[in-house]
Length: 88
Image (tube, rainbow, N blue to C red; front, side):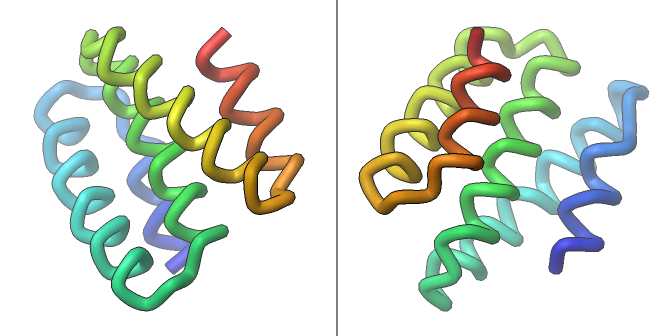
C-alpha cells in the first residue's frame, strides 16, 4: 500500500496525474474502510499533491487542511506537520 501511494506521487504529466488521482481515491477508500488512518492520511497527502500538480489548488489546500486537522486530533503530529507545510 505504501508503495502504491509512492508510485502515485511520482507522476507529473496530466494524463498520468489523472490516473494517479483515481488510484489514490481508490486506496483512500480501502484504507478508510479498513480503519488504517495513517495510510489513509498518507494517501490523502499524496492526493493533495496530485491535485496541486493538476492545477486544482483549492482542492489541494482543502485536503491538506482536513488531513492536518484530523491527524493532529489523533496525535499524528508528523503527518499534521507535513499537511500544514504542504498547504502552506
